[in-house]
Image 1 (cartoon, rainbow, N blue to C red):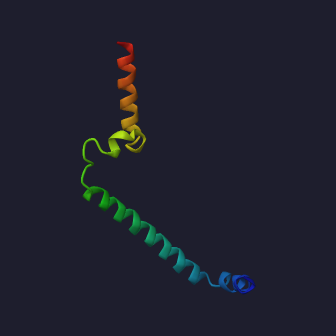
Image 2: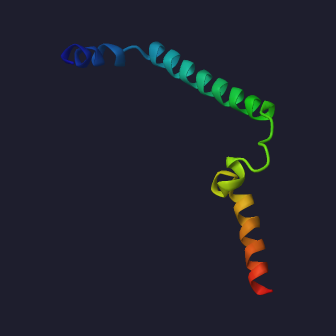
Image 3: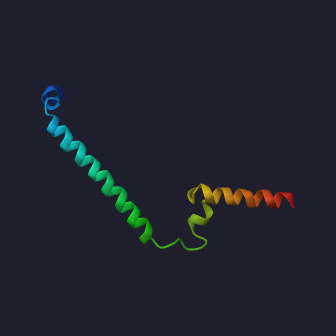
Length: 77
């Protein structure tokens, strides 16, 4: 651990290395987001009656709100 702490002043004096590492991290993050977005469009929809239908909280806030509105309307009847 002491060896790593001794490297801190050396690394802080290398702004080019810091820029390179920052750029590499940024490019990796953007690539992961783009891949996740592409994969989301390629996934088939879940089968009816699957786990996604039972766990409403995993379907997103819009679905939860619509189900709550339906329950409120049924309660008024």
